Image (spheres, rainbow, N blue to C red):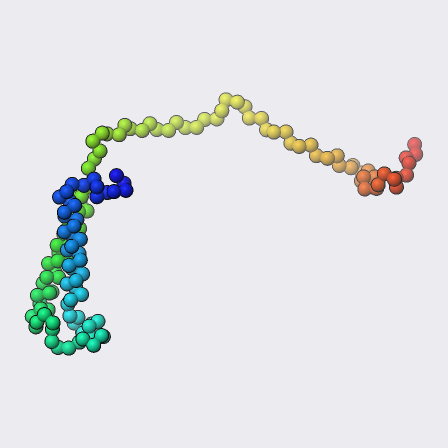
Length: 142
Protein backbone atom coordinates (compact mmCIF):
# COMPACT_ATOMS: atom_id res chain seq x y z
CA UNK A 1 0.00 0.00 0.00
CA UNK A 2 3.00 2.29 0.04
CA UNK A 3 2.71 2.88 -3.71
CA UNK A 4 -1.00 3.75 -3.61
CA UNK A 5 -1.69 5.74 -0.43
CA UNK A 6 -5.13 6.93 -1.63
CA UNK A 7 -6.24 3.33 -2.23
CA UNK A 8 -6.24 2.62 1.50
CA UNK A 9 -8.50 5.51 2.62
CA UNK A 10 -12.28 5.63 2.69
CA UNK A 11 -14.53 7.01 -0.02
CA UNK A 12 -15.46 10.03 2.12
CA UNK A 13 -11.83 11.12 2.38
CA UNK A 14 -11.40 10.70 -1.38
CA UNK A 15 -14.35 13.06 -1.96
CA UNK A 16 -12.82 15.49 0.54
CA UNK A 17 -9.49 15.44 -1.33
CA UNK A 18 -11.23 16.09 -4.67
CA UNK A 19 -13.20 19.03 -3.20
CA UNK A 20 -10.04 20.42 -1.59
CA UNK A 21 -8.20 20.21 -4.94
CA UNK A 22 -11.08 22.00 -6.71
CA UNK A 23 -11.01 24.67 -4.00
CA UNK A 24 -7.28 25.15 -4.61
CA UNK A 25 -7.87 25.58 -8.37
CA UNK A 26 -10.73 28.03 -7.73
CA UNK A 27 -8.52 30.00 -5.33
CA UNK A 28 -5.84 30.30 -7.99
CA UNK A 29 -8.38 31.54 -10.55
CA UNK A 30 -9.94 34.05 -8.12
CA UNK A 31 -6.53 35.52 -7.33
CA UNK A 32 -5.67 35.80 -11.04
CA UNK A 33 -8.98 37.58 -11.82
CA UNK A 34 -8.45 40.30 -9.22
CA UNK A 35 -7.21 43.71 -10.23
CA UNK A 36 -3.92 44.63 -8.65
CA UNK A 37 -3.67 47.68 -6.37
CA UNK A 38 -1.13 49.44 -8.51
CA UNK A 39 -2.26 48.24 -11.89
CA UNK A 40 -0.11 45.14 -11.50
CA UNK A 41 0.48 42.71 -14.32
CA UNK A 42 -2.66 43.78 -16.17
CA UNK A 43 -1.29 47.32 -16.62
CA UNK A 44 2.01 45.95 -17.92
CA UNK A 45 0.17 44.34 -20.84
CA UNK A 46 -1.86 47.44 -21.67
CA UNK A 47 -5.06 46.60 -19.81
CA UNK A 48 -4.76 49.08 -16.95
CA UNK A 49 -7.95 51.04 -17.75
CA UNK A 50 -10.37 52.36 -15.16
CA UNK A 51 -13.25 50.11 -16.21
CA UNK A 52 -13.60 46.58 -14.87
CA UNK A 53 -14.74 43.58 -16.83
CA UNK A 54 -17.02 42.35 -14.06
CA UNK A 55 -18.31 45.74 -12.84
CA UNK A 56 -17.21 48.39 -10.40
CA UNK A 57 -17.88 46.60 -7.10
CA UNK A 58 -16.18 43.34 -8.00
CA UNK A 59 -12.99 44.28 -6.15
CA UNK A 60 -14.68 44.13 -2.76
CA UNK A 61 -16.59 40.95 -3.64
CA UNK A 62 -13.50 39.13 -4.97
CA UNK A 63 -11.54 40.16 -1.88
CA UNK A 64 -14.13 38.56 0.41
CA UNK A 65 -14.38 35.46 -1.79
CA UNK A 66 -10.58 35.12 -1.72
CA UNK A 67 -10.49 35.43 2.08
CA UNK A 68 -13.20 32.77 2.45
CA UNK A 69 -11.49 30.41 -0.01
CA UNK A 70 -8.14 30.79 1.75
CA UNK A 71 -9.76 30.08 5.13
CA UNK A 72 -11.48 26.95 3.75
CA UNK A 73 -8.28 25.81 2.03
CA UNK A 74 -6.21 26.13 5.21
CA UNK A 75 -8.91 24.49 7.33
CA UNK A 76 -9.08 21.57 4.87
CA UNK A 77 -5.29 21.19 4.92
CA UNK A 78 -5.28 21.09 8.74
CA UNK A 79 -8.12 18.55 8.85
CA UNK A 80 -6.44 16.30 6.29
CA UNK A 81 -3.10 16.50 8.08
CA UNK A 82 -4.64 15.61 11.44
CA UNK A 83 -7.28 13.00 10.61
CA UNK A 84 -6.49 11.49 7.21
CA UNK A 85 -4.41 8.42 8.00
CA UNK A 86 -4.37 4.99 6.34
CA UNK A 87 -6.12 2.37 8.47
CA UNK A 88 -4.11 0.07 10.67
CA UNK A 89 -3.58 -3.44 9.24
CA UNK A 90 -6.20 -5.97 10.36
CA UNK A 91 -3.61 -8.66 11.02
CA UNK A 92 -1.03 -7.45 13.50
CA UNK A 93 2.52 -8.05 12.48
CA UNK A 94 4.51 -10.24 14.87
CA UNK A 95 7.26 -8.46 16.74
CA UNK A 96 10.62 -8.97 15.20
CA UNK A 97 13.37 -10.52 17.27
CA UNK A 98 16.40 -8.47 18.04
CA UNK A 99 19.36 -9.54 15.92
CA UNK A 100 21.94 -11.61 17.75
CA UNK A 101 25.37 -10.04 18.05
CA UNK A 102 27.99 -11.53 15.81
CA UNK A 103 30.57 -13.64 17.59
CA UNK A 104 34.00 -14.73 16.51
CA UNK A 105 34.26 -18.27 15.08
CA UNK A 106 35.63 -21.04 17.27
CA UNK A 107 38.46 -21.77 14.83
CA UNK A 108 41.65 -20.00 15.90
CA UNK A 109 43.04 -17.49 13.50
CA UNK A 110 46.25 -18.52 11.77
CA UNK A 111 47.92 -15.91 9.63
CA UNK A 112 49.03 -16.97 6.18
CA UNK A 113 52.75 -17.55 5.86
CA UNK A 114 54.58 -14.74 4.19
CA UNK A 115 56.11 -15.51 0.82
CA UNK A 116 59.81 -16.26 0.96
CA UNK A 117 62.00 -13.41 -0.13
CA UNK A 118 64.67 -14.11 -2.74
CA UNK A 119 68.13 -14.62 -1.37
CA UNK A 120 69.79 -11.29 -0.97
CA UNK A 121 73.56 -11.08 -1.31
CA UNK A 122 75.28 -10.38 1.96
CA UNK A 123 78.45 -8.77 0.60
CA UNK A 124 79.38 -6.63 -2.35
CA UNK A 125 81.35 -9.49 -3.88
CA UNK A 126 78.27 -11.72 -3.82
CA UNK A 127 76.29 -8.93 -5.44
CA UNK A 128 78.90 -8.55 -8.17
CA UNK A 129 78.80 -12.29 -8.86
CA UNK A 130 75.05 -12.13 -9.37
CA UNK A 131 75.41 -9.30 -11.87
CA UNK A 132 78.27 -10.86 -13.94
CA UNK A 133 77.35 -13.35 -16.63
CA UNK A 134 78.59 -16.95 -16.14
CA UNK A 135 81.09 -16.80 -19.03
CA UNK A 136 82.88 -13.70 -17.78
CA UNK A 137 83.50 -15.05 -14.33
CA UNK A 138 86.95 -15.98 -13.29
CA UNK A 139 87.35 -19.35 -11.72
CA UNK A 140 87.58 -19.29 -7.98
CA UNK A 141 90.94 -20.07 -6.46
CA UNK A 142 91.14 -21.81 -3.15
